[in-house]
Image (cartoon, rainbow, N blue to C red; front, side):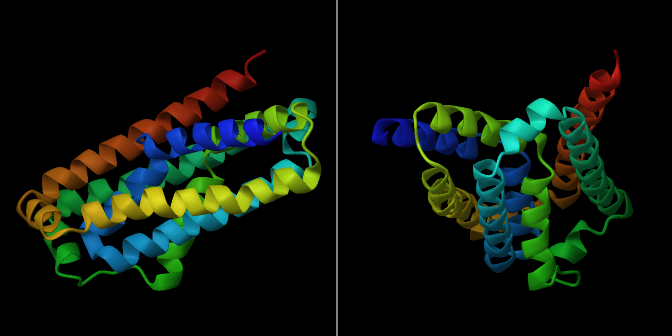
Length: 211
């Protein structure tokens, strides 16, 4: 049982370290508004991990199996949220407002930064599939519900460490100077990346609706 727990945690850490919406949300906040905002986004992501762990322990995988439309709806929801973030970044770059963001004339409130991290992870269908796989793996290894529930705090800790590291990296003085110099180009890159991720999720949802 312990070996299954460790194997699942290593897999989750690998997924957390790889580029994706969570990492980009942290990097974007760090570049635009500094370390504090980035770490608040990280706390939102960690909080979302606890929510996913609770849903997993109480039958998330079984819900997806019995009602596949739930996952399809999540694809549309997650895609729409990422497309909204993309629109904001692209609009900022188009209007030349990126420098104003660097100068802290536009900031996310602490609650908004936390909420951004929470929404990014909760509306990410890949996270849903990952947690569904975790449920299958851990329950299949004979772990009880409480053990699966206890997996959440561990994932929240690894999320804090990994994404917190990204936050510190992208909020460094060097990263700030690079962003200040190439602000509009970086905003376009972030907007395009979020838009691509959101578009992929929406298209996946459309394909899932086809008979």
